Each structure stands twice: as C-alpha cells, then as structure tokens.
Image (cartoon, rainbow, N blue to C red):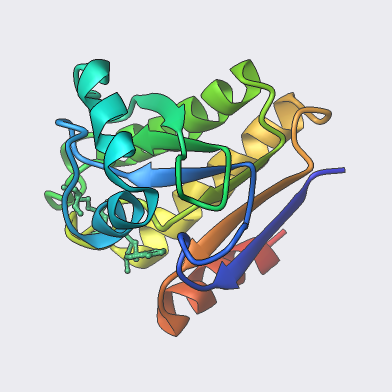
Length: 171
Ligand code: APR
C-alpha cells in the first residue's frame, strides 16, 4: 500500500524521502525558489554533477546524488511555464510527475518528495497543478502498486498545502 500525502515545510530542511524532486529549469544550473534552496543546502558538488547532465527538457527528469541534503537523491524535472493553458502545459506537467517517478523506480527509490512543480516562478495555477499532480501520482501508483512506500508533496505555504490536501481528499 503506497502512502500518498502532503506536508507543510521546506523540502531541504529535514529527511522527507529517499529522493526529493527539484523544480528546475532546462539548464539545470540552479535558480531561485526551491531550485535555489536545494542547491544552497546541497553544496557546490550538486552543481558540479548537474553540469555533467547537459540540461533537461521540459517534462523530462534527471537524477544526481544529494550531497549535504538529508536524502540520497535529487530528481530534477522541468515544469512548463504557464501560458494560459493552450501550450500543452497540462501534458508537460503530467510528464514531469510521470518521468520523475519512472526514474525513481529505475533507481529502486521507494519514497519521493515533490514540491509544487511550476506553481511559483512558472505561474501555473495551483488548483490546476494540484489536480494534475494528484491524478498522475495516483495513476503511476495504480500501475506499479509495489514500487513505492510513500509519495508526498512538501508545500511551502499553507494555501498551497490546503489545495493539494483538498485534491487528495477527492476520491
Ligand atoms: N521547499 C518546498 N517548496 C518550496 C521551497 C522549499 N524550500 N521554496 C519554494 N518552494 C515552492 C514555491 O513556494 C512554489 O510553491 O515551490 C513551488 C515551486 O516554485 P518555484 O521554486 O518557483 O518553481 P517553478 O514555479 O517550477 O519555477 C521554476 O524557478 O527557481 C527557478 O530555476 C527555477 O527557473 C526555474 C523556475
């Protein structure tokens, strides 16, 4: 049985899961938001390893070690920038969650913590992002019921947490 839940917090502040997911940009060379927090907490070796990855396309996922972070892996995914919903944003965000979890399964990772991908700098409406996030995670767990012990979202503000928790409560 895979536990799927939400928590309010800073995804770098304590051990939440074997892997944490970074809402990165296509360069994989750091940025603001959760990307900046993850690089600050992990230390310079993270960037050094990221430099060898040659970037990441929107909707795709890549992985590195976690260095000084309280977890074993960082999975990078690049969410879509919101342009009103007519530029395949929903499909790309779905792909972020699916590819992140597929990569986790490839590495035998059994617990994964996500931030709210694309809802900060990339301006994706939180409600719509949460719907996609929850339905995609549920679909992957249904397809691979033995793969994960726990998948959670670590949400940085109360409002975002309420939206994701609300989506999880829907059947
Ligand atoms: N822990 C958990 N969540 C966090 C943290 C943190 N330490 N810091 C920020 N967040 C939250 C934001 O509040 C938001 O809800 O992560 C969510 C995603 O916001 P962003 O980090 O801005 O990511 P995104 O909207 O996907 O934009 C990605 O921003 O930082 C740059 O390099 C990044 O260019 C990329 C873009």
